[in-house]
Length: 65
Image 1 (cartoon, one colour):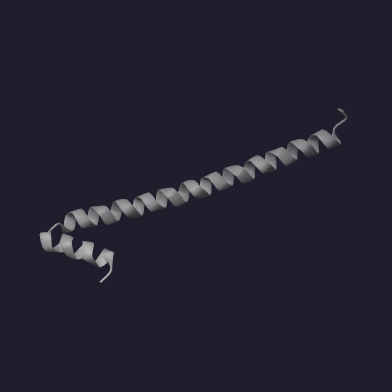
Image 2 (cartoon, helix red, strand yellow):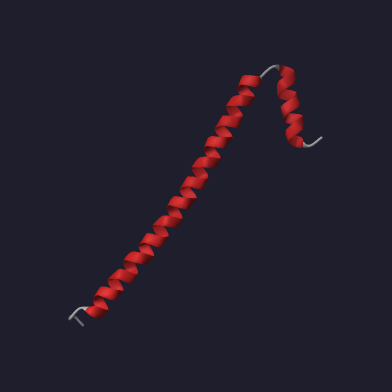
């Protein structure tokens, strides 16, 4: 029996199913938030790189030195 099964069995034995459901919901919400933030940070890095390249392109192709 793995650790997750032991914890689940202990919670069920004590009759704390509502707490178990709340824990599962909170864990899922936290994981979703972490994945969303990771994707948002990656998109921000890509957008920053795009803006830098666009600025470099504009400097190269404008009449300014």
